Amino acid sequence: MQNAHLRLGQLEYLRSTANIQTRIRLQVDRYMGEEADGYLLSLYGGDAEVGAIAAAIHEKHPFTLTFPDGKSKTVSMGADASCYRGSVAVPGRKQPLRHLVAVSQALHANGAAGKTYLLNYERSLAWSALVSFLGLPADPRWGAAMMDVLEREEKVQELEGIGCQPVVIHATRSSLLEAVSRGLGRRELCFPEVNGPVFWPSFRIGEALNIGKF
Amino acid sequence: MRNAGRLKLGYYPLPTEEGHWLRRLLQSTEPFSAIDPCVGMGAALHLITADLPCRRYGVELDAERALAASRSGIETVQGDLFDAHAKVESFSLLYLNPPYDSEIGTLNNQRMELLFLEHTYRWLVHSGVLLFVVPEKRLSVCIPLLAANFTGFRLFRLNDPESIRFEQVVLAAVRKPMRGDAMEANRSVLQRLIFNTEPLNLEDEHEPYYLPATPPAAIAYRGLPFDAIEDLIPNSPAWKQVAPFLLPKEEMASGRPITPLHAGHVGLLCTAGLLNGVFGEGADRHIARWRSVKHTTISKEKEDNVEIIRKRERFSNELSLVYQDGRTLVLTESAKTVEAEDAECTPTAGAA
Image (cartoon, rainbow over all chains, first blue to last red; front, side, top):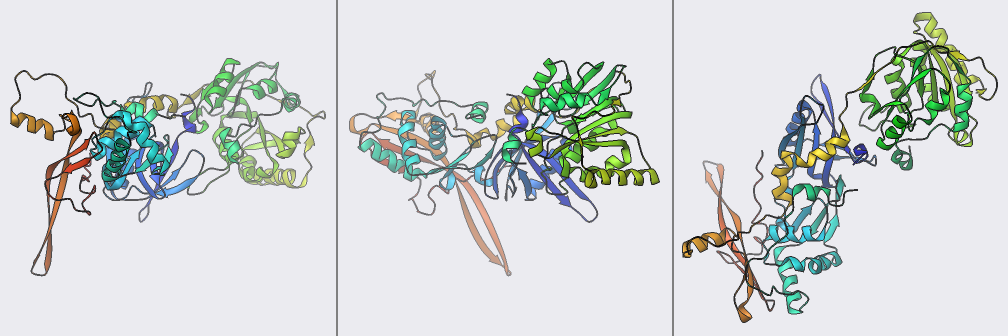
């Protein structure tokens, strides 16, 4: 893809101590959040800058996030956010690029408390994630019908995103079990014909990140 | 700038006719280097330097336009101008038509016209020529910088309907560092020119600017290659660590065991979720799915007016069943409570 800068956000962190004011700006390639709460933040840059942002996340400091369309807002990853780091070797550069993904407590417990967060919405991925996170006895072929029900009941809500089109699905295990029960009772869902394991599609993170890429 | 303008990266090229008129302002007999820091597809730079013995250089943010400029014979760097660097005093002509916008940040947001000029004016040799295309009202922020570093100012109005709409003018100037009283006098001249004098008509005859000779130049790009990084970043180890929170887990074992499983083996495989699937016959056919659940028990003790809170974590297993006729069943180690429903599986965050 070309013109990646059009899809990048910018994170600005300002820290003032007694005599020193530090301003750090980094590129954000993925963000998922709602109002002032950030759920997932992926950014990259130099070693020192990424280290400073990781420290700030652990200290629950807020940041200014600028979206690709120019809108800005102050966000925080909240308490108990986790930071995961990686290095990416970029051809033509001596030093590897530092990459940081910060995950909020809410996303860490994805599926719990009746909220399942997804970076991009695609029905088979959404159904597989719901079944896996909530521990549902289900069949992959039920995905279309079940996601129809959830969409009709407006349980799938869009979140703010950078580099992705995130959604949150409001559904608990008991509500989904009830919906499955209704569907089977009305014969809208077909039960597997043969006994044995139920095979689910597998997803890789690269595919999940690129679903709905614009 | 409006969002429509931002989407085009502030790309408002110089009207072709105006390029022909601007060309008449320049003269040179010896080879020289010219740069357009917002080169677009290169049309303006080609028009302005047509038939001149010129080496053309450009910087462009948009990948498609940068490619078009390169193909037209301009040595183009694709990327952010502020990450592009050239040696000072390496160009004879600086044609600058920057985006008409402001910085977006929390502090001290400056006009882009000034920032682009600040970054590039040092690239001009002494006696090199600046052609600065800006809305007339935006020139005022550039007065201190222009007064300290340029002389020989002339202001021209552009006559194309689009240029009239944006009140575009061209400020032509010659690079010459000015200090002390000379700078103050220069500032007065510039202020009079901008605020009190009607701009000249570009279509009239004007004395040309003579461009000094310069050797071939080079532009280095020190910024991040965002396009390449965008393709590389999904393979980052950080994403692999985050995948369990975003993607469904693959809990499936297939194949035939070497020896028959005894009850203990079956129990272990069941609770690990490796024997999920469809079981039973007739009305009892069902899909079974196991999952591990973490329970946290919190106890509070008071000792010498100090409250001690103890948290004890343990894991247990749950089995959910859905029958062919629609019945569902959740088997847990204890009776289900409303408060505990679906909140009990919340794992604690583990920092990496």
